[in-house]
Length: 155
Image (cartoon, rainbow, N blue to C red):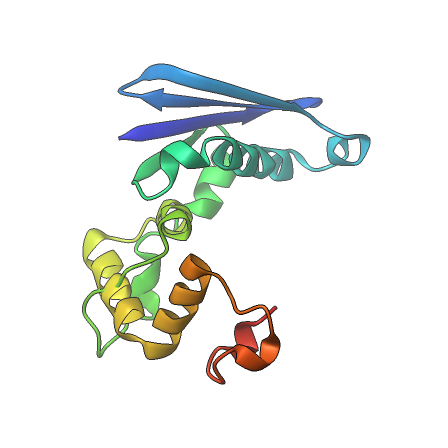
């Protein structure tokens, strides 16, 4: 499993892509003047975003771990079995768009069972399936060509 390890300082962000604890690629970014005024937790979260954007080709469609040393951020992002608070009762398995799935899976840290339930429910939902198809194949150029069910998601 791949790991994206991130860190933030007062003036910059860093990320490293690890596979089996060996560095594969590095990324860094200087903070703009405005970003330098962000709170530390916002900088750490921005480092996660930058790391994921930089390494999305490696992470897309796979399970991976985001690693940070910022304890408050870890507490905020770790929601123990978050999906159990609102379980889907009528569906048992679902499939995400891979990139979104990786992010949702990393942030929510739901159990494998809950993730499977969510994946199946998403796959079985006709509107979500339609939206997924538009995302994968491309949206129609004209709003009038969009299915009525998908129009609320146009923008």
